Image 1 (spheres, rainbow, N blue to C red):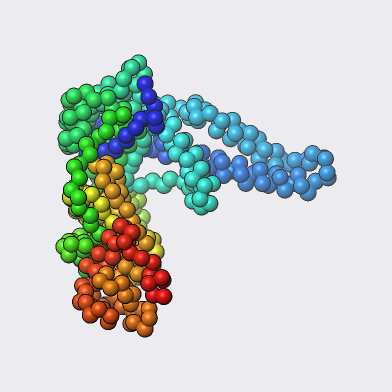
Image 2: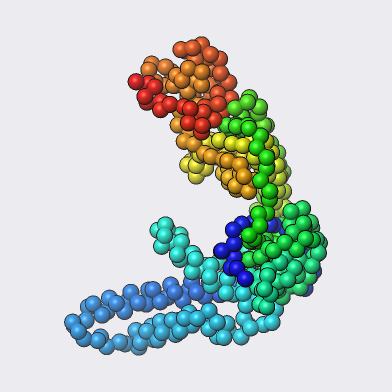
Length: 442
């Protein structure tokens, strides 16, 4: 049987499910166990790092080629380093050391994944130079990761692993047993009914802050998950903006739904009530986790945030799918949201619109359906006249300001709607039919 990494196609699905009270306790238990293991590795490695530095300094200050005499504190420190190294040498050692990790409801693969994620975090830090693994705190949202295994099977299917689909509405998971799911995508349902060879990889169980439970699965197969769509001989450039969500090179506009702004006042009121209840609970000396009124209001605020997130996600999914299905080539600007958010006047609107998420959707859907998506450098796209190539701000032309939404080219006298003109320029730049502006200016 092929490993997950060697399969040609990969696909991820996210399903909502409805656990029983007993299953919720098991999810919480596994979440706490994997958090304990992750924090144990973080704490013991941190202790070893500082202890070794302290002992190394003592060795340097001692006589050359002489082993320094350790006092009681230093000897105890050296013993701690040895004990930690023994415990962290093998993944199973930490489970053997703590009896509560050997409870039958705790998934051993959840603990193994916690260790693997800690090591991946360190590898990521060594690669990019920042982001040292930190302790995982208690949160109102839970998650843990397990794996689907195929111990004796010669071929992997959706219904013969340790995590498997029983039918289109039920899934069986390790330790949790059978859970009821909300629904299944048609392409996955067809694979289940026709028994198409598909391997389930990692399985993530998550509870959100709004008390909703989701199941995420990584799937792999040598058979494509979606058929390539027929060519439409259509190409389009899109300009993302705040007044309208996007304007395309054909002149069509998609309105910005502004989901956050629609409930901004309601959310602000709910958060002020939450803050007041938090202050009252602290004044009375109550633990916030046991304060019922505080927890009720926290759940209300979390559900409002979750609703905004779901609305935005649905809007972006529908729009990105429509663009990819209707056009063979989609060209957009390469936007750096991190840099754009430095503008405090527009940061809230930029966060609400979800540009980065939208571009990521276009990228993976284009690959899935056999279409093409590319991003270009946005330089000069809003300042150039697509008719004659004049660039505003050069050769004595006045540079356009952000408030200038409509303008007339001083060279060819062509009237432009700024966003539509930018979309045409984006398409031309993606097709390579736009010459270098520096050469044009010369």
